[in-house]
Structures are given as C-alpha cells and as structure tokens.
Image (tube, rainbow, N blue to C red; front, side, top):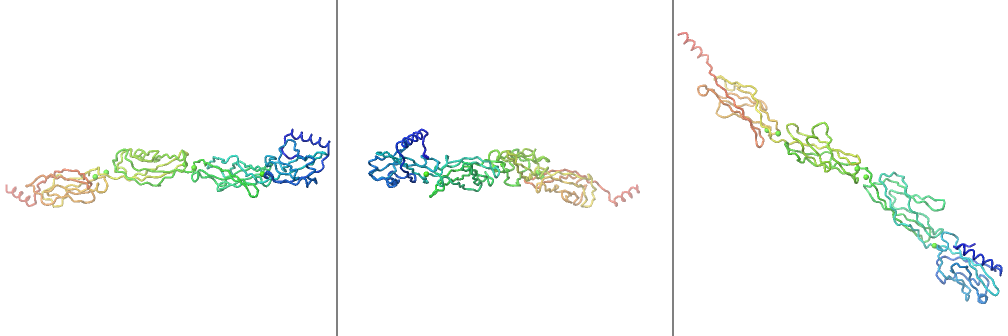
Length: 461
Ligand code: CA
Ligand code: CA
Ligand code: CA
Ligand code: CA
Ligand code: CA
C-alpha cells in the first residue's frame, strides 16, 4: 500500500517495476521506521544495514541504492555507515495533506546477486501550522432591532496539521451580545455560528469588534484569530424628548409680529430621519394658532397675531415634536402677557344734577361717576380729581366710584354757574388720563321767612 501522494502514472510504473523485481529475485525483508516531519537534512533515520542484517561490505559490493520510482527522494543511503539519512526536508503537509497515516515507501536494491528490501518510513505530524482564517476580518451589518436568537454564520479556520495538531475548537470574545455556537458536521468539521444573546443598541454602541480565535490541540497550542466587525444599523427605537416638559415665557402685549417668544428643543437619539425632529403647535380649541407660529425645524416660536392683554392674559401653547418615524413627545409653553398702559381711564357719568339749590347742605351729591381702566396694576389704577377753587369736592365711595359733592356755600350772587372739570388719570408711566366737564347752575331758593315776608307785603297792597 502506498500512502504517499503519487500520480496514477507514477503508481503504475512503480507497480510494473515491482513485478519486474519479483521476476528476477525476491524481497528478502522489510523494515519500517517512524520519523517526525521537518527533520533537518542529514538527520539519522535508521541503521538500515543492522536492521536488515547486512554487512557494510555487501552494501558496497552490491552497489546498494534506493529505488523510489520517480517520486521525490527524501532519503539517502550512506553505504559507508549503512544508515539512512534525511536527504530533503520532509513536509508532511505537502506529502500527504490531510491523509493519515503518511508514509514513504521505497526499496533498497543490491546487485550481484540482485536483491531488494522494502522500507517504509512513516512520517508523523508535528504542530507546525497554526489554525488560520482566509480573511482577517469578517464584516456584518446588523440592525439594532435584530431579535435575540438571530444566527450569523462565521468563516471557518483551517489548520494544515492533522489529528490533535489540527483545528480543535473556537473561542469568541467579547461575548456581551453574542455567544458562539459550534455544530459538528458529517465531515468532522464544525459549523461556526454566533447567536445574538442580548439586543444591540446603536445609541450605546454603533460598532462592535469581536475576536474569533481558532485553536488546535498541539503542544504548544497554536491559534489563529479573525476580527468580527459589526456595524449596528439604526432602528427608530427612541422618541424625541423635550428638554423641558413646561416652558415659561412672557410677551408684552402689542408685541411686533415675528417677536421671538421662546425656543423649545427636543432631542432624539436615533440617526438620520429617525432622529430628525419637526415641531408643531397642536392647540385646536383656542386662537393660539392664529397668534403664534413655531419654526418646525428649530423650535423657535414667534408672534404672528395681535397680543392684547385686555383680551387674554395667559396662553398655554402645546407643542409636539415628531421624528420621521412617527414617534412624538409634547411640551407646553406657559406664556404670560405683560400689560402695557394702552388704555386711558374711561369716565362714565352715572347720574347728575344740572341745578342745585343755593342753600343745599354741604355734602350734597351733584354727580356720581364711575371710572374704568382695563389695564393691569398701576396702569389701571385710577385717581380722579376736580379743578380747584370751586365749592365741590370728589369723594371716592367705592373702588372706581366717585361722588361729586358740594363743599362749602354756594352763592348765586357771586357765581351762578360752575364749570367743573373732572380728570381721571391712571398711575401708569407715562400716565394716561381723561377729562369730563360739567356745568352746574346754582338756583335761587326762597327761604321760608322771606316767603312769609313777601306774602305780608302782598297783603298790604
Ligand atoms: Ca504538521
Ligand atoms: Ca427616533
Ligand atoms: Ca435607534
Ligand atoms: Ca391705563
Ligand atoms: Ca393694557
């Protein structure tokens, strides 16, 4: 049996020669040796003369030589010493590949008389090859939404050595997200896979680098590695999140259009369109959409309508942030309207006397007025007064209600008509005011005594 690698042609020739030898002579013996591969040139294989029981003279006289057919000559015969030596370095891997056992077969031929001996040299494997991967890198693109249990087939390593020196197993590091799964195949090799154990999260780690190590069972053990490079693809697994749930802002009434009220901001951990945020006002039941506008890309909210403190002092604006994958968050903006003094007090005369009797008691009510100013605080606080040097005074009866009453004697002889100028001013800065003018005539009223006196005079006439 020939274990070495030979072409069919070579094998046929060897068989023919072998038959030719058999016809001429007979094999006198055979001997086997076992040597490891890769022995240095000149190393001793065996003492063939001693092992075949031949003396050195016979080797010389018989012109002993090695016959190998035309296969490479790895072994040489030293006739002087009767030993077999390594002629060429033997590489078991190129000689036999994965076939075991691996052996060299040849004959030692002698002449006068013609004899031959069969020699078998078994070449044993040494661990001179590391397991290796064809490619140093394996690249994967895996979505972060990949389900646990997903399987990814890895490239296998190879080791030219055989038996225990051949590939034994694999180790995968780091194994936070993946575990290694080895499945024995019918041909004795292993199917190498990695299984997703824990979901990936692109937002935490968008690239993973693992190392797959293949090890053999030699001593010392040899190994080979390949890098597994994983690019984690994004999924829309994050909704936008506003920096604040509630924003506070204030705006003065009558603010110009395009005045910036506030800027809201939301962020989204995803990338690309899954992380692209669009802002929108979502109020539907009030007039907020007519008064305010939000920039859909930068969250800047501006005034677009008339802000009137006297109509509304507060707005609650609801804003939604959405990503292109349909996930949303919302926030509200509490906008306080700041009053400005844009209303002057309004004077309403509730009732008035146009004439008043000359002898009215001091404190007689001539007019009752109500003053109103819709502004806030000081801007709406009203102070009313009347002009000086008239026998009237203004009394505050209630908030914003005033009575104009007589103050001192009215003397028709001196003044029959009083022009009263009432001014109501607010306390805003600058202050706004209104004026109301009133003319009151003092009428002559006869006293009782005078009345009688006049009648008596009548009687005398
Ligand atoms: Ca080897
Ligand atoms: Ca998102
Ligand atoms: Ca994501
Ligand atoms: Ca005012
Ligand atoms: Ca106002």
